[in-house]
Length: 324
Image 1 (cartoon, one colour):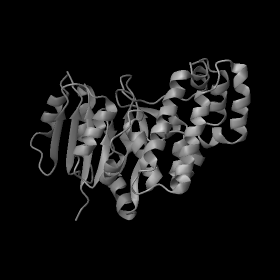
Image 2 (cartoon, rainbow, N blue to C red):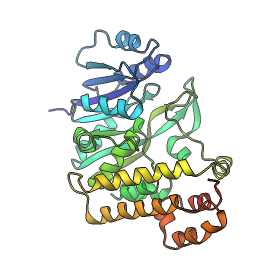
Image 3 (cartoon, helix red, strand yellow):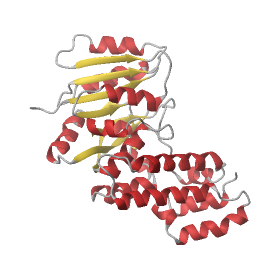
Image 4 (cartoon, one colour):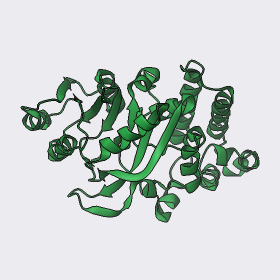
């Protein structure tokens, strides 16, 4: 029997680009079986576009869920994913363009490796009009060769505990992973959380090749942050309190849930998650006076925590100089 593939497509006032995205889904070399559209209270013509483009489809079931009140990105994706019936589910943004071989390329990996739980890929960044910007998603995120190697070697948890390198618009996963991940914690974004659950309990991998045009148009709900030198320097001047509180809340939610994951996370993974939480707790507790931060930051550096659980020197500098 062929593998059934569902598409979890979340929309919110996306009429401007949605038709192009839907047509790219319908034009896949390996057809999908189901498209679940979860609309988060759009006030434009989003749902009319869905109805017009999908009218008369044969062989592809289209399910449309309508939220009377906006639930937000993570809750909306959780709703869409829960409604999918396929063995494999591809996450989909409303404003991107899938390359024709995206589904076929990713499904082939799942068939070749039955233990694979989640797969993500690179993407080509394009502007509002679809013109390539000259670089890819992973390049822009500054994903290192070491992080790529860790994922390829089956040690994705090592990379993901340092930083998120997974973008939902490039993901495909097994439906069982959705059930293991629910309910999604409020502190986490849907794609980052499912990636962490998958890496804690099973096998994930990364395709270094682009399979999607990832559109950047200024109105993205979750877009790409440019990590050039000026951006990095600018972040050193941003107040630290809210970011560190968010990182601590995420680490705490992961630690609280990890022991109950099914299948179980290994003892070594649980120990790493505990250490990650301790690291973020120490960072959040740093004093307001910069001079008093030097001792604890240097101790964390010597212990290797900034390299194991963050961006190394960049995070160390943040902790030393960022204002409260």
